[in-house]
Image 1 (tube, rainbow, N blue to C red):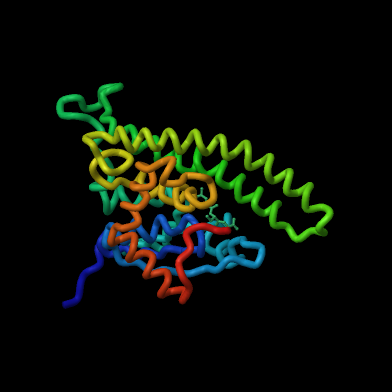
Image 2: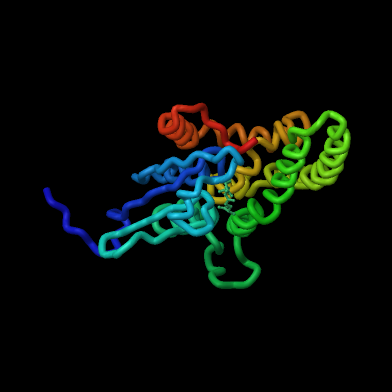
Amino acid sequence: MATTEQAGSKEQAKITLHWLEESRSHRIVWLLEELGLEYDLKVYYRTKERLAPPELKEVHPLGKSPVLTIQAPGMEKPKVLVESAFIIEYLLDYYGQQLVPRRYPDGKDAQIGQETEEWTRYRVYMHYAEGSMMPPLTAKLISSGIRSAPLPFFLKPITRSIADQIDGTFNKILAGHFEYLESQIASSPQNGQFLCGPELTGADIMMIFPLDGSQSRAGATADKYPKLNAYIDRIKERPAYQKAIKLVEDATGKPFKAIVG
Ligand SMILES: N[C@@H](CCC(=O)N[C@@H](CS)C(=O)NCC(=O)O)C(=O)O
């Protein structure tokens, strides 16, 4: 039976995710799988400098990933969305309100200070993931690049010492984040298993990228942060997370790697 196209229809919108290997774009594959949405996955591979390939600039001038394009009937061209947090919020607005905690308790609508703990955490973590956690992790990526730079052996002690100094500072900063997150999991509202309470939210989807790999490269080991590690494991066991991994492995023919390095 022929379907009539309805302008702006979210059900008939065509979604394309521009996915770059070893990047934040895995957040969005996971979200799309959690929401059970149909979409096209366009795969991009990093250059030998580990950057995004120039083709991504044809989709958005920044040339970074994730980029999501969405086109509903009646739109002349797709809307191009960048920034993982914005992409997540946009998709949740139309397709996933169940992944956004309720903002006010009954009878407290629009009252300053009465927002639920779940909602407050949700909004904080949507910003915290990129704004506070990613910068020290990126600094560690730089220090590991300095450490492994191909240099004559007599220069190696110098670069190693620079890398150690950078690491020392950022390890301390990251330890502060991990301690805080350990206590946040322990005090999750309603004895919840996720960062904002008993249900998965968009904030967990933002946070898994900086947390993934923090165990091996930034000292967030299970002996020091058992609750945080159990939380990461719980996330990774989710069927939609697993399905997202399988999907990109099938698309690339390579084992999934969450982060560059
Ligand atoms: N804050 C942005 C960061 C986007 C970003 O830097 N993406 C990285 C991948 S994790 C990228 O495309 N890097 C390749 C490049 O800069 O050439 C977001 O959350 O989407």
